[in-house]
Structure formats: structure tokens, C-alpha cells
Length: 118
Image 1: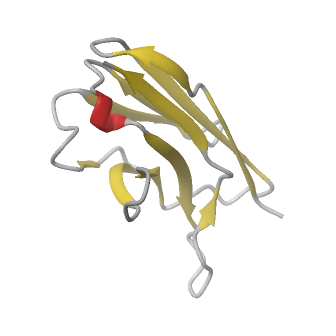
Image 2: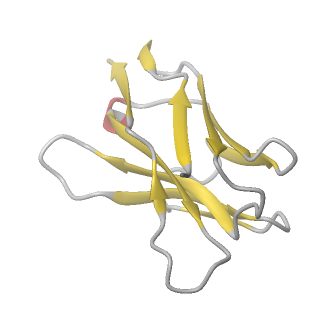
């Protein structure tokens, strides 16, 4: 059974940095893509960043130039380096992983809270 375990969330002042990690286990197939969504209080979940196994990246408009996503395919781990954090980045951050297998739903982590104080 695939499991995603996130770490690295916490409280930081505006302008600061945090690094999130998400380690996947339970498969030898790897993942077509991995990434992060976030859900601010009382708002819908939104894409933060994604990365394919080949390294192609995609970012949400609000984080471009501030956040960097990377992954270690050998470890099935994805990282999110968040710099120049703003109060509006406050949210629960969820890691996801897309299977190579057709018809299989994406896997999700339990979420990690990021709070940016002004």
C-alpha cells in the first residue's frame, strides 16, 4: 500500500523560508508525477507545484519565483523549497503522487500546516 509522509511544516515569519519533504513508500514503480497542493482556511485546494519523473515542473502563479520543487526518484521523495514566504501562503500543504498505472487514483499525504506570521 502506497503511503506518503510529509514533514517540514511549521510557523515562520513573513520573508522567511521553509522546506517541505514528502517521502513515498509501498511501490517499486515510481510515480509519473509528484507535487504539492495547498488549502488555505475556508478556501478550495489549489496547485502549488508539480514535477514529473523526468524533471518537468509546473507552478501556481502565486508562488512562481519564490518556491522551487525538486524530487529524488531513487528515494521517491519530493521537496518544496519555499522562500520569501507571505502570510497568504498560510495553508495546509498536501503532497500527492500520480501512479503510472492507468485507472489508479492519485495518492495523498495527510497534510502539513504552514503558518506565516506578518
